[in-house]
Image (cartoon, rainbow, N blue to C red; front, side):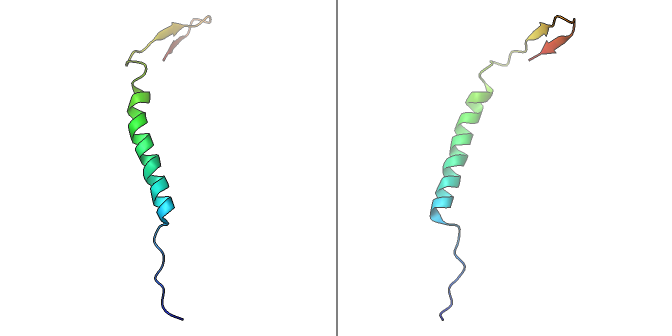
Length: 52
């Protein structure tokens, strides 16, 4: 039986990883900037404050 080297990462897996990384890299900044950097304080009925 001839020697066969270990296969590297399957091409489809490499493409799937690359596509996922590209999607996350391009959408994360847009999702992070949707609130415009504003902090809002709410006074709850029980007198406590909540910041978002």
